[in-house]
Image 1 (cartoon, rainbow, N blue to C red):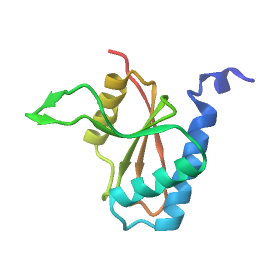
Image 2: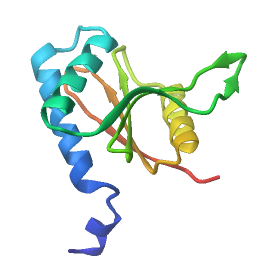
Image 3: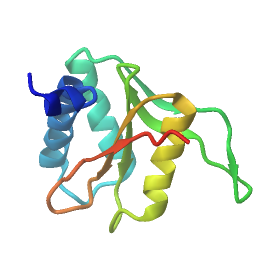
Length: 129
């Protein structure tokens, strides 16, 4: 195994999850609601016997008087997965998943926008402050 491969965090699990995300996108297309994508992903996780928590609350963090702390999925107690179904990913989406990574103590997150014609899960690494 090369030095670059050793640096990939949760390589096997993240590839497996990415495959399921593509399966969901292929089945539902790009015009469903976020909850529908989450339900479909949950069905596939159950089918593949992958351990997960859905909409898991993290320690409350108040931002602009909003409590924003529910992670869409934490898979195998290792990877945070945040699902989107909107025009495009914006800076706040990156900040949101970074907050989830910080609060959960996880190192890797996947940010996924199902509204895209071509699915491109984005790997986000926790920035230690």
